[in-house]
Amino acid sequence: MFPKAEGDDRSLVEQARYLAAQLAQPSSAERDRPGRWDASLFKALTAAFAPGLTGTQTAAVLTALGEGGRDPGLTLAVTAHAVLTTVPIRAFGTTAQRERYLPRIASGEWPGGLSLQQTRGTALACTVAVIPAADGASGWMLSGRLDQVVLGVEAHHYLVVAQHDDGSRTAFLLDRDTPGLRAEPDGPAALASCAWGRLTLDQTRVPADAVLGTVGAAGTETEPLVAALDWVFTSAGWLGLMRALTDDALAGARTLELFGAPLAHSQSIRFLLADLAVQNELTAGLLHRAAARFDGDATPSAREAATVRHFTAGAVRTVAEGAARLAGATAPGLVERAHRDALFFASAAGGADVLRPVIAAPLLGLG
Image 1: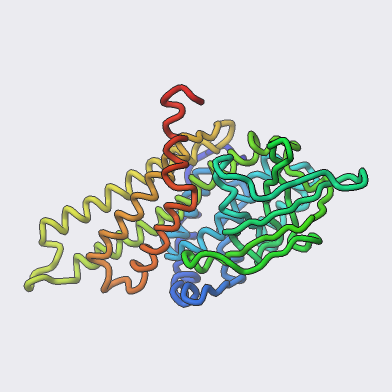
Image 2: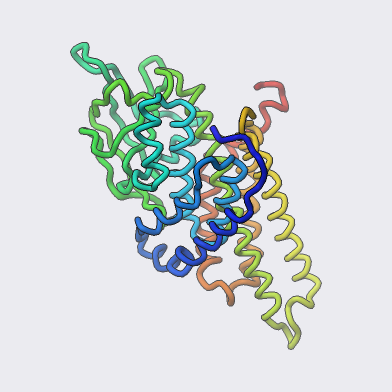
């Protein structure tokens, strides 16, 4: 999935943070209000992912993009493209699929999208059905609808999981120009700079070579991998935003005054800043450990992936609420957007109802 870890490239992380701060941060609020997509900006940020990055390095780069850009919607789009739709091709793609897609994905030329409805493993009912092509021809026919599609109409291709009559599932790589596939702009108000969309498949005929992995085996191949990737690497961008909010809270504590004295002199404010720092440190530790599970021959852990997502969702809300007391004057608009987007982030992976059973299962010896 990712190369074996051989150390941390700090210069790469610093470059990513600087790139996002220079290119994305100045226009983040302007792009968020109307939900404006910036294809050139997206392509520039994907350049931060040099070939051969490990899982831990990828998580560190995404954290840097989130911290520097202060735009969780754009960071989610980059994560979906560079990780969620790319790693499954590396893991399960045929030689032809890897040769066709991966070079153009790496260059940012072919953005890859997927529905967040399909990043919960088998915890959610599948909304796309698949049957063999009619008249004995090779290939498949897909029908259904997917909402919350990251990159929407901006994507070149999509990772789609469809269900057979017997309940098994198969993963497919579908190009946007596939006949019978319709992509339309649509999505939640949160993370507006992500370029949301909706996919409708109306007896969409796809060739046999569009299958990603083994026919009928997505439930044990692609779906668990995509769920773990989402839970871990989407959290990385939010850690970056938490760090940005904490920095703004520190700036507020140093510059704002209460009864003629800096807020930093207040014991309660110092306690608050300490709590924000602890949330950042705990999230970073959980994230690093979970991301390392994707390096080399290591085996991703569903429990650790679910743990980092569950903890991060709560930590983001804690940090956003704390920053609201101190950062309003130094980060106008960011705190409000962080509150709004954090609520969506907490529910997008299925929320605690999906994550907690995954965390509890191995504790009970249930796998």
